Image 1 (cartoon, protein in one colour):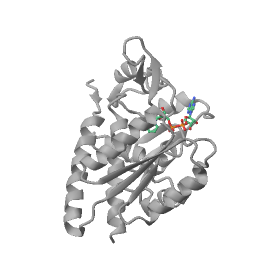
Image 2 (image 1 turned 45 degrees about the vertical axis):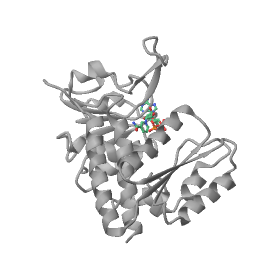
Image 3 (image 1 turned 180 degrees about the horizontal axis):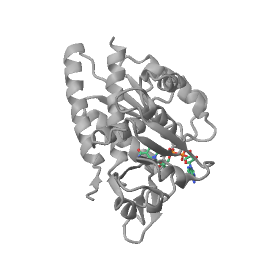
Amino acid sequence: MKTTIIDGQKISQEIKLEVANETKSFQDSFLVTPGLAVILVGDDPASSIYVKNKEKAAIASGMAGQTINLPSTVSEKDLLQIIENLNLSKEIHGILVQLPLPTHISEEKIVQKIDPIKDVDGLHPFNSGLLSAGTPRFIPATPAGIRELLLRNDSNPDGKHVAILGRSNIVGRPLANLLSMKSIGGNATVSLCHSRTTNLKKITINADIVIAAIGIPNFVTEDMVKENVVVIDVGINRVKSSMTKRGYRLVGDVEFESVKLKSKAITPVPGGVGPMTIAMLLRNTLQAAKLQCG
Ligand code: NAD
């Protein structure tokens, strides 16, 4: 059996190009440039890279990208005020606060402060409520990217049994809603598994599509999946390595080499889900600008 290695890098480039073309025609019609503001609190090196990449990608798509770097000592009150100013700004259509935040700041309060029409991360309860109701507005970027990877790789989840491992608010839970929705890219029967699931293997071995988002290196092994399965690996884990200059390498939640042999299609790490997240964020930003311009 020939396994397809799903190329998230290539698909994300295609989507970025689509978004750039749509941005151009939107600008020509409305004379408005979609604007994305990304707030980074603290100086975590990995978060700084993610945020820089988001700004760069926005600019490359013809949008205005703005990063607001704040010290880790910033108060919750000041952060709320900054969001309020962005909520009122005519130039900013999408606001994203890079998580996690320092412990003295309530993530819940911050997420809820963002105007839902500018919530391009789709985490505001208003937007997660719309998704649960089956009428989504902004779909969180990683779940949206996963649905796109499936659709563009001849792996439509319609009628399939999908096992999702992990129930986080940014990946597992919204993904379960999305793939079970009555719509294109939905109609799956979803098993949402988590750390308290018993007999996990019994569920995964019967699944047509397995999606792992738990953050444990090489957790999914070949004995847990059936022949011809489609596997989406969301995990990004650093493991020590003397083979790289950085002293670590990135691996997913799936034991790639062995699971690949049983798979019809599988995403690599890196180069699978990761690049899709930024592409879908740009799509949400353009959609936010369109909504705000009526
Ligand atoms: P999280 O770290 O918030 O939570 C982990 C989840 O895994 C929990 O829901 C927990 O119930 C579940 N879990 C833990 N042990 C389990 C077990 N033994 N069996 C089944 N489920 C178990 O989750 P997250 O924020 O979604 O992150 C998960 C992984 O995905 C991390 O490696 C993260 O870096 C990665 N991630 C990647 C992207 C991307 O763009 N590629 C985006 C978000 C997260």
